[in-house]
Image (cartoon, rainbow, N blue to C red; front, side, top):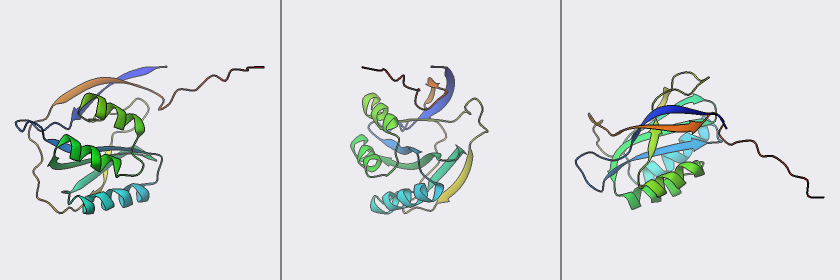
Length: 149
């Protein structure tokens, strides 16, 4: 599988141990479906504004700068439809979420598509934890089919 190095930021709140911003990686749905599920959890958990970005149809990242504990953040992610399972798994394993900020090869820059007005005041962080990591060029590698007979 071909890989690329990309940049992102983690959801850890600097200076507030045990607090995290709420980030989502949403896949396999329309923008309207992403908006609907994010509005549902935004209301249920009384979250601040949510910014939805994308660089490809059916692939969205969402940023919310409400501060929550790790357990609350995981509950919010699990209550959100269309969250990428790999994102959930890595968030749980690493005890933090990472969303990419750089562009992927062959894709345009990410644009903010929608801002969902929230229920809580927030401030955009002036500092954040930067991450550099590798990811595949394809979302899921093609599997080889083996004949067993």
